[in-house]
Every structure is written in structure tokens, then in C-alpha cells.
Image 1 (tube, rainbow, N blue to C red):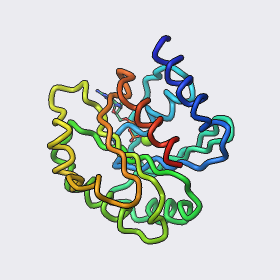
Image 2 (cartoon, rainbow, N blue to C red):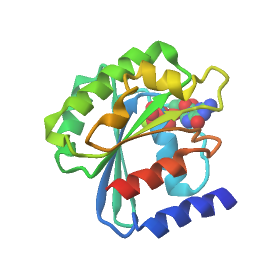
Image 3 (spheres, rainbow, N blue to C red):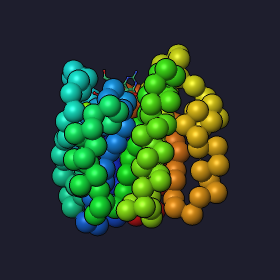
Length: 182
Ligand SMILES: Nc1nc2c(ncn2[C@@H]2O[C@H](COP(=O)(O)OP(=O)(O)O)[C@@H](O)[C@H]2O)c(=O)[nH]1
Ligand SMILES: [Mg+2]
């Protein structure tokens, strides 16, 4: 309960909920987007089946609209989120930091987002999720594998945070960073 209060205080203090904003959650399927949306919505963890098909999910909290899309091999869903993101204020890109096999695939999708000129100034929060798992890689390795070793030098805001949505660790700081950069 304490952590949740703390998290909401951060958001309230920084005024994210008072701003009108569109936040896009992107990442490969199984990265943890649905889980994060539910944590934000319900203030508690709900067990659920992983997303298995290209989908989009919507959530409004206050004046902030969150929308999540699964990336990776789904050309249809890519078209959907590209149509949406021309007016987006912030992007949250989730990665399963314990699934090294899919780092190249995730990096490819992330590169496409970073290189896209139509959203070139939109801040990107990158969350290396699932650090509670033993196979999770270090932040240094994560940055290297995702091609983010020099992300700090970029003009557009890129924030990189390691977290565990299930253990409610780390993503609060990430959201705080994002709300300061929107
Ligand atoms: N161990 C662990 N599992 C997580 C974490 N976040 C999400 N998961 C699990 O990863 C799976 C995929 O999560 P989901 O939110 O459906 O991913 P999505 O496809 O990106 O929407 C589910 O079984 C979640 O319970 C985390 O921080 N740690
Ligand atoms: Mg999902």
C-alpha cells in the first residue's frame, strides 16, 4: 500500500494526471504492457493470461490516455499504432530484460520508433522489465543489447529504467521521469 501511495503522490505532485496527455505503451508481446496498465488502473496486481494476438488496449486515468500495442511480426498492429502516434505525447517502451533471445527483435522495433521522423521529439521511456527474474540482465548489458549505450547523448529525451512491474519496483521512477519530460 505504501508503494502505491508513493507512486500516486509522485504522479499527483508532478501533475501528470492534470495534464491532457496521450501515452503509448509499446513493446513485444509478453513484455509486461498489460500488467503495467492493470497496475496503473487497479492499484493492484491482477493475474491474467499473456497477450497472444495483436491487440490494442485503452485506459484513461484522469486526463491521461494510455494505449498499448504489441509489436513484433504483426504488420497490422504496426499500422494501427503508427496511425495513432502522430499526436502522442510520450512513449513507454517495455522490454522483457530476462528474455535475451528476443533482444534483437525488440531492438529492431525500438530502432524503428527512434528513427521515425514523425515522432522525433517525443520522449521515450524505456523500461527493462522483470528484473525480479534470475535471468534478467544488468542495466549495462541491457543498454548494450538494445543499442542504447549512447542514448544519453541524444537530443530527444530517452530515459532508461530497470524495473519489475510484478514486484512494483522501478517503474514509478520511470513514470516520474516521463512526466517531467512531457
Ligand atoms: N516475473 C515477472 N513477470 C512479469 C512482470 N511483468 C509482467 N510479467 C508477466 O509476463 C507475462 C506477460 O505480461 P503481459 O502484461 O501480458 O505482457 P504484454 O504482452 O506486453 O501485454 C505475464 O505472465 C505477466 O504476469 C515482471 O515484472 N516480472
Ligand atoms: Mg498485452
